[in-house]
Amino acid sequence: MNIKYIVDEQHSGKTVKFILKNIIELSERFIKRLKNSGGILCNSAPAYVNSMVKNGDIIEVLMDFTEESEDIIPQNLGINIIFEDEWMIALDKPPHMVVHPTFNYPSGTVANAVCYYLRQKGEFKKIRPVSRLDRDTSGIIVFAKNPFVQEALIRQMKDKTFSKEYMGVVYGNMEQAEGTIDLPIDRKPGSIITRHIAPSGMPSVTHYSVLESLNNFSLLRFKLETGRTHQIRVHCQAIGHPIVGDSLYPHIMTEPGSPCLPAGVADRQALHSYKVCFIHPFSKKVTELAAPLPKDIKNLLEILRK
Image (cartoon, rainbow, N blue to C red; front, side, top):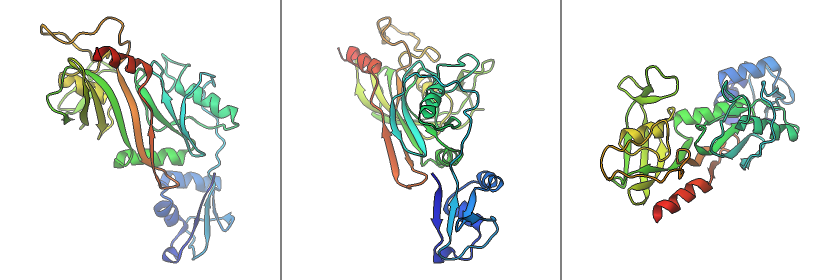
């Protein structure tokens, strides 16, 4: 699981650090870590980062890290893997499951399940989530198997080359077939969890399109331009079309004839991360992953179609 690069004529005379930073695209922090661990080789010998390279030299980065998984308890919870290679693993997260242990959820999380799965394969690694989902949001979540992949994919998120798309059911019929919600989001005063629309907030942009109109409800596709906490949920409530089943940002019936659901039909927000697309850090190929709608949202749609 190491990275190899053969120096070409164009880069002959450059330093090892130049190759690491500009060709292999390692961060300064990661280069420093490799330097301290002796993880940089040139023609199979330890290399100094300021050494010059010549045409045909083989630069090798040792990526086979053995790491303890922090204090995460391995738990056999079962995971639905939709993609895995030596660099990363992507899962279809079920609803009602936290991604990473917290004070309120010290176990039973996706990270506990991934830790167990990797240890069964003899891989002792830190759990490195690249993307996160709210507890009651289902769908794709990506974990990196080493710090370089984590950094590379997070950098793609910042550069907007890592895209995420969701499907969700909202209250009401949309006036337009597609649109953009551009409203700043900030933490709500007095709460460590809830967000709201506020001029003081961070720029937040959500694009949506209508997939299906369902008797005063709509199935929407969302594409995020930014990735704020609860962004889709806050934006949908702000425009008067909250996500069905969202207890934190709920639908409030203010007028006669407002859409209403039978009790017990939606026990969580009907929001699902169904597609991610990114450039694989090593193959450099466009990688697109998809996860179908889960059973509970499919059942909800069937009820709304009647």
